[in-house]
Image 1 (cartoon, rainbow, N blue to C red):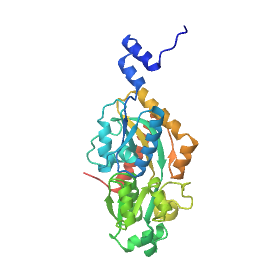
Image 2: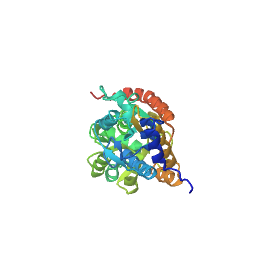
Image 3: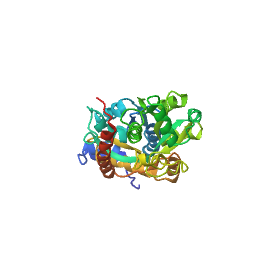
Image 4: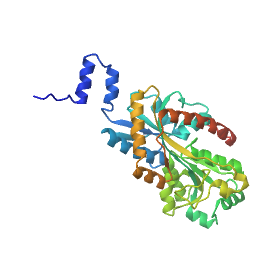
Length: 335
């Protein structure tokens, strides 16, 4: 009778029992055996949440285990990020980190509950996105605001009367607005929300006057006519909104050099086995490289990445250096 090969899981278990493979190696090769939690440090509905759910869906399909998105908003993303920093380094808790949690908050907050470099193992950059300066369409019409120059004129004629919404203190959405205020000399009162979606709802209701939101979360409301896009905050125009100028283009000499884009990526607690980290990176990169996924993200204004853990770590190091002078120049500080 012909011999049949043992199933992979049975073979691995036999090697462990025989002492030929460490138990930790078996656990890593067998990962995941239960659901994996992906912490989103902002409220549902924003770009961080949108991208996390797209990635979680693909990883669930790839690994055959559920990747659950868990929203833990607050403190500019610090609450959710801290949960991951202090979670067991076993691969069952991941973070959808942002430029805010990993590169801005360190310079913005007087006290940080975690170290964005030492307490995390980078997995992969998921996507980079421009922010977009949006206003309530109806209010813009009533105020005769058709472009960035009109907005600046109105703001200077009504000092202290405009409210600026953001997804939280220290986010790129907040800092883009602070940079705009600094460069133009306009004064707006900042109102931080626990995520993009509640901030957008307040903007559309008329309570807020302007927001520098991530493009993917603002896009449906721009297309639906509720919000008017005045400019994108990237150095070049977005393919998703080719007719909308950059802030630098639209703002004139005062806004020369303006650039404040966002990014989102997966991270694990420091010490997570690299075998697990590499598997997550490879499956994420594979999903992001498919034509369907590329088209889906690009249509929302997101540029997919999928780089290696080492490349993502180097990218975060550069971003920390980049945002330090921006935060200092803005004058923003949170005790």
